Image 1: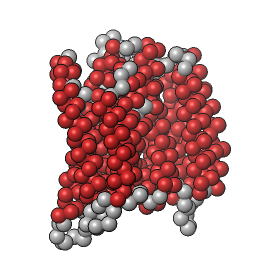
Image 2: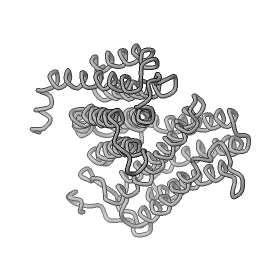
Image 3: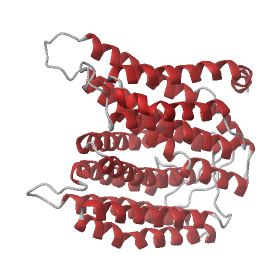
Image 4: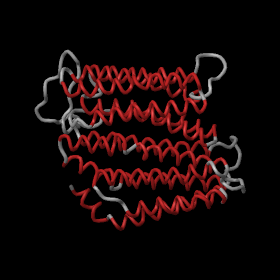
Length: 407
């Protein structure tokens, strides 16, 4: 895979990092790097399903936020220097192993199993190791430039400020750990946002940035489809395929298709075109707001919705109500996903999507009904709402869709 970027700046031989240009695209090594995050997301979903309560859901979202922040940091790095060459490739290879260790420790993130290493501390140490590798490699790739050095110094400070909170949380456990982890994330995220306000951030390639986030969203949707397959195949080998599980699996795939359509049909393309037309500090600020922070609700919404679909599949043949855990996950996750889209569109285009706002309201209003009806009926109701939104937007944005594809 080659970059067609016109005249290239000479690689900095001491750093072994080759700067990217406007025409840079995602590399295959970055796609490989993403795979370990998909595995980690499956572990987080399994943890939430196992805990089966509000605290477990919150714990899963905190772990997902840690993973997202790590992935986002390396995406920034890959936008500044090629991820498949030199010191950046070496650093990301080491980080891949670290993220895999984080994923392995997810089931023990709050409850250390007897014997072996202390699970919560293993997770914290692996996470801090991966973040430290990123900041070190990014410092090397940045060379002696004053602006990147200042930002990286602030990033080090915000990360280190959260270390005592993460370590103490791992030792205390329970709600104390949840609160301390949330505090560490708040410090880290706030520090990064303050660092972004100096106006010195630069996004080298709009296409790379849009493509990387689109691929992560696609992988998250793919993980939800895999979860549907696992749930549908959960019965004993050789047993007959039940009508209810089969119907639930079909509806689950339709939900995944709707999630894909709502992001990739118009939204992703329009956002990339907007980024290409925007330059300098304005582009960087837009990226920080709409992608670095604004995409987390979108990804979290996919994961939580997948958790709800898994719950439906596990209970598809039961006549009992879906209940107060999986119904909020199913409808709340979809509402979070669409709400993230509304915020994303507002930041990218300064426009609020009325159809998606209405859909969020409908999902939240229908939540009490979803709690009381059988699992299959709840999933059918969600599918109906999402399919109706797709139909409305297909008609409403037909001309815009055509224009985007003709450019």
